Picture 1 (cartoon, rainbow, N blue to C red):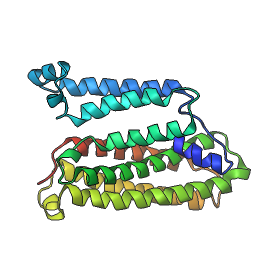
Picture 2: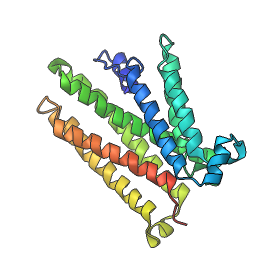
Picture 3: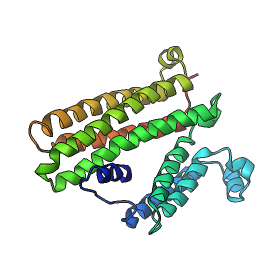
Length: 251
């Protein structure tokens, strides 16, 4: 949403400053991360948990999810600092995405740096797509008919870029993590989540095409049901991606 506000500002369109102005939302996100981190640590064995709570770095380094969660909590706090330069918020948001890309199986790949790069680009594409959905939801609450054309053009360009990034990096990520024969010869939870992601992206593309080319262009209004459906699918894709990063990859 922060990125979409930046794009809208350059085009002279309406802005919906949720972050960093609405610091309560950032605190809720940080607390949610903290709760998920506690739940995750409760699944660990007592000896490993004791080593982590004793701040043994050699043990903590074996759990990227813990490092990423702690880093994200700190970054959320830094993101809501008041009266900082615009570049500060842009850098913090980019670092957040990079930190998320460093969790999961990335460190077990042959070239971790390459894995981090393609995952970061993939997450940027997802951020742009979901950000455009949230922007359109906020916009739908108080529609200005005279700006619908400009908004449609902006969202169309953003979504095209997001789709290219998601599809291209998604293929690269699948190649990076496993091979096609292994993936389909050994059907597992990971491959099922992959199918869910592929189907979800296709569904979001169709709904996005309908929203921008028919609802916004021909009817001059936001189709709220299609919009909420697309956002729900986006949430499912995020969940599927998180699960894929935490379970074993077919080998």
